[in-house]
Image (cartoon, rainbow, N blue to C red; front, side, top):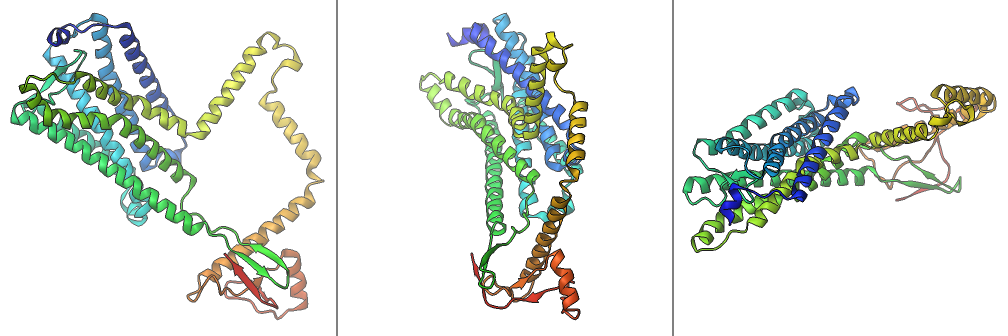
Length: 437
């Protein structure tokens, strides 16, 4: 009997272990994510995006701590541990942390959209203060939205199998039905804005890479060789790419976990009352599956962030290797050949190698410096050419860049050589050059 099971839910061992494991993994992951954010580099911690990520981690941690212990206590006691007040608090927590997490993820997507597509507006108006203000407004707006059932606009009810409370998404009264559609509609709008912003950012990044990733080669008949021009500077940094992929992965996890719940809200409220009035039995199993999917979202989010931090993974693997080596050689710690080399010995050996090879590497270092200067001068020449008003990639005037050694010789032979407005000494090439894209 459903009513009896709602009053006295069974306590299967598998469900208890699953709930306890989810709680432990969620708390551990969010704590690690918050610690990693706190010990990150100063320039990274002060970015708007990672301020929102920190807000997301804190929200997920609080949501896990407010809801999972009640479920575990219900399974342990084989009954609901409190009365209507606890049911209202649990339902409010489920509603609030679900919509607040969705709102913060939407704010992260909008922030990335403004940073990539409207960089000037972003640099003038978006900063950490704005991010904190957005978080505050997000929390206040979601509190107002989710506390409405406690004041009569909607209902908090206990759901199958009696271990959780949520809004009444099969409400017979008009106010309850309106609140179900209101909450589901807000979630649907947030999901749509998040997806659209991510698609716009993805499209912009792909277009930027196509424009800046063009590599042109020049075939000179006189030299009978190909010259490869350096890539134009990229408009997106590695940090921005990392933020983008973090947002994409978190959005994918969010969609997988949250869409079933949003679908159940609309399906239950649209067809549930009429189906129940006709004597049908509601699909409680699908309700339970949807809420369990939603419960995975705050658990997986921090681990997505942790896995996206490549340097954190490398440091973790390195520390694990060192710990394994210490455990393996613990019994032979006093034997010199079995002791892992310390950082001081590594530094000493490295310094010795540098001292021994310094003399042999002088010529190579000078050569590399000359080559770097020549590459820089070639890049400056290319930027000067493309900045002209009548520039066209198939009609670039070929110029030969002088290296450091040749420049001194050219100055001695041609003291009156012409110098361009940018200070670059150039000599016209004889013959014709053709560009191949």
